[in-house]
Length: 85
Image: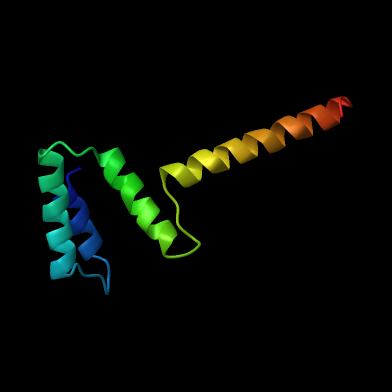
């Protein structure tokens, strides 16, 4: 599904809209991609900007840390269950 198709579907929901500035963002994102900027890098930069504004941000970095934390907790629980600790 293309971005335009997603936007069309999104805009069919009551009360939704896309501002002119949001459309400019999409244009700039596409220009950055055409210039060789990767989507992963864009997503990471957005996450860092979001993090700088306060708690509650999520993205690749957040999920990598969360996966590591949950893996550690699971490992500790398994060790506890086996009587290793």
